[in-house]
Length: 402
Picture 1 (spheres, rainbow, N blue to C red):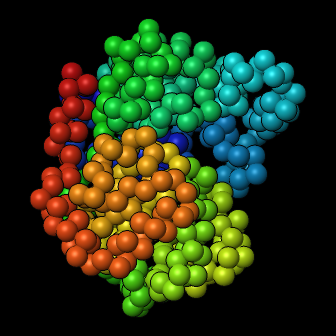
Picture 2 (picture 1 turned 180 degrees about the vertical axis):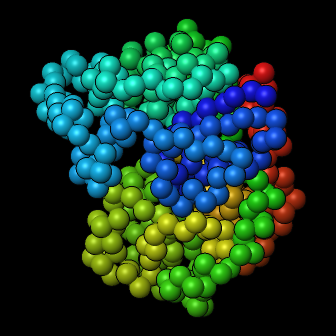
């Protein structure tokens, strides 16, 4: 029985986190001995970790490295030593030269300071897997394993990391997995000497799990967020409230739609650093009755199932799990034209692809709002499409473990 370690930052809402939980629930756990180190194990996905997966605790040093100095959890775990290291990272980054910043991102700079202070993982493994950018360094530097697999969950060109620094880490890995052909192309462009190491392993989307959970309406009905009672044309979007996800475009699109006389409710599921500014934008745009930021839901699928439309206004993506989930639930989709969108959507057949701006998003929504026959056609085509990749992804992943 192979002994496997997964490492991830947290078990809170996010595409990588959701993908990992789905993968763990799809693997043949009777034939694998799996440890999971979540640096912050608290979050909506913790209760979805299978009982046969062993949660192991990260070291104090790794926790303090990963948490912001302003977070409550940092102060729960810090001591004099870790506090001094944290302060040194913050001050050192502010004083860095421009040349240093060109060679190392903030996270890479912090890693160089912390790595001699972080203890090695006590256990040894057949395979150690960093399932998210950022913990790649920990798995390479501090885990003893016969084989190490790293993950890049986005277009590398869109990340803050510097390839000059990451090349030596990627070079020590058995494989570096990413989630789409576009993302693999980005890695090959940045690391041409390592091109044979890169593998595409899509984020797992299980129709079996998603369709079952979409029927569980209890949390939605008791959430007091107004969604269940809303009788307007309902839009759902899901994602972290960050610049990448483009919800500022969504708010502006909602203003355009309201000015055009459309009556709808747009519900955004997610949390993130831009929540306050986005809520202020809804007030300034007089669409607080239209756009509702309702936070994270452990089970978002009843919301998607009961919506009239799924909208994704992202500036960029690797391969969106939420988009695949909306396809599995056969929702009409409006999505922006980021580079890898063609991996999931054929414009006019299983969704509408629009330009990355508020007016285009509003135009796409208006087109589907006013055309029920087009919505039905998209749904019909989605029902004929096999949108679940569970068996294929599990087989590809198990091949990597051999």
